[in-house]
Amino acid sequence: MGNGFVFRVVRTLFVTVMTCGMAMGARAADHVGQSVGAGARLFVTKTYPGHGRLSEKDFRQLADAGFTVVVNMWLEDVPGYCMGASKAGLAAMTWNLGMADAEKDDQVDRTVTYQGKTTRYTLPYSPAGWAKVTAQIAEQAKLSRTYTNFKGALLDFEIYDANSTEGFCETYDDATFAAFFREMGKPVPNPLPQADQRRDYLNKQQVLALYIESQARRVGEQARNLRRAIDAINPSFQIGVYGWGAFKETIMRNVATDRAPVLDLDATLYGRTIWSNAFEGGYDADEPDAKGLKWSLVTAAEMSRDARHRGYPAVLLSGHYPQSPGPKDGTQFRFTVRQSFNSAAYADGYWIWTDWTQPQPWADKQQWIDAMMVYWTQANAALDAGDWTWSSRQEDSVANPKATAPKFIMTTDGKTVLAWDPMTGKRIDTDKPLTWAAVNPSAGKAKSKLRIAGWSLRSIESTSVMPYEVGHGVRAMAMGDVDRQDGEELVTLNGGWIKIWDTTSMCQLLRFYVGAEQTDVRVEDSLK
Image 1 (tube, one colour):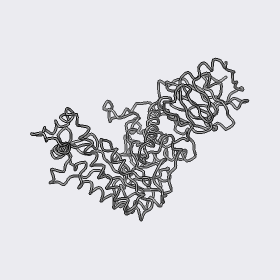
Image 2 (cartoon, rainbow, N blue to C red):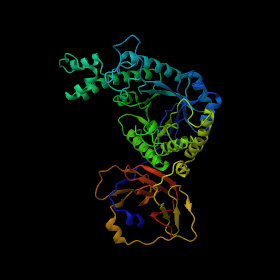
Image 3 (spheres, rainbow, N blue to C red):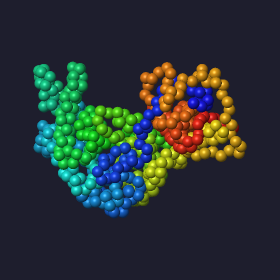
């Protein structure tokens, strides 16, 4: 371990060398015989003028831009869509509603919100509703046996109804409410509480969680039936799940298999910050690029890490939305592209959602699409080339007025000292040779909490916190503010790579290669 690290570490850290689980750029599968997994780059083609009937030029544009999977939003001519995608070397999937509309005259099989309002949808566990969804997906699975690039169906569980629920969640209709009490062996309340009072009633009785769990079991049964129907046709056909609510988890768990991992389509990262009613359109258009990108990267990496540790096969794909609020010149897509780059480079992949029309001030939808695709071409090409600093090298659209003073990373092979820009990974040329000042060993021992133990760096005092997934060949470490935002980062030198880590989430923020001959690393305020 280098003296630069010993001198500066003043806190307890636990760092274990382990195989890094993050997606190292595009690992998109050949669309024949393999599943969509880590590194996937999905584009939902809602914004394309031809709806499901994309032209050969459209498919080629998406392929040239580096996407790996195109998603038919409109379910128009699915065979033609699959063939067009295949000619361009793309895998294909479809976007489907995960809930079925109730029959017009059926007032019993309808979800009722906790506010007592009736929706257009069947009950969440409705056999009739799930039969409709299953029949549609089964037909698509049959097509996948002919069109081998047709990988799966994505199910949308957002509530598109004036009487909105909290995502895909429990119903408070009369029959379900009464059946719950009979299931528990308790008398049914007589009279029944008003529908808009039932959640409070259950909560006061301390059985609300049981009420939700009871319906979740039934939803899980229906999801398993869907998976069985698919497996009878094509066990490799994958299901993706978008939405939120009490039943999302049970659906994902029951449609996931080893051959067909579920795709968890998360929408947390649509904007520069998390959704909030405090902002017009739900997102802060003025959040500086640097702050928004760090938040997005860390959130994507944390969610992907958690998904790998679930009890079922799942791939977390971060959703990004180029029409969320941003610069008034209509270039929010540049931020979105940088977000998506980070989600593929430092998490497990991404999916892109777009809206019907182009944002202001674009007058032509195709021109907006073309501008986005040029930028995605650069980003995805960088992923394919292993250029992990591409996003951090791009010019910010919204500057950070509170950026901290830049620090430098220095490395040495024991003879020559090199300086590196921690944001771009570029070597910094200096007028004269840099020096590597000696450090008082006794001062270092007093402050250091780490030691080298074989192939691992481990805390002497504690092994109870989550490890950093630093990878192999660790030679040295340092601490310092290298991302120009408040707070220090952990910098590791291993296998010739500089890796920069967020010390709160223990997620990797950046990496670049400095050479296997480099043996020590420091973070310095100035070059001397």
